Length: 107
Image (cartoon, rainbow, N blue to C red):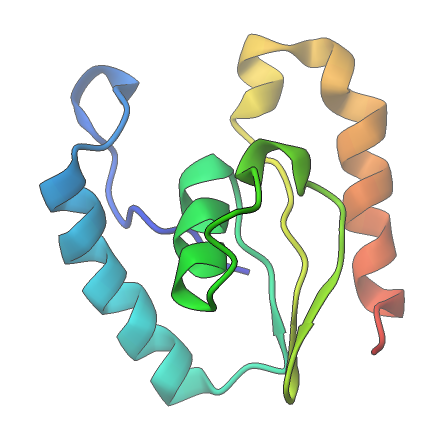
């Protein structure tokens, strides 16, 4: 389970392109070292980055929450960033369902 941006941005603002590129380097390295079977990007930016990285640039990242993707030997399962609950508490049940599926994900 990972996020693209590895620090808290001032005022919780959206990341700038330079920050996405810089943090993307660290996320790529994290994936190389860990060699996960399952990647769980948390939030829009992590999901968008990974879908772009694996050639799915035509897919709308916002619509991919809770969907499972197979890429060779590993899976990608995007979830909302937990901070989304701070802004929209009504997402709680949906987020819990998405997180509860994680132990059962298989190809």
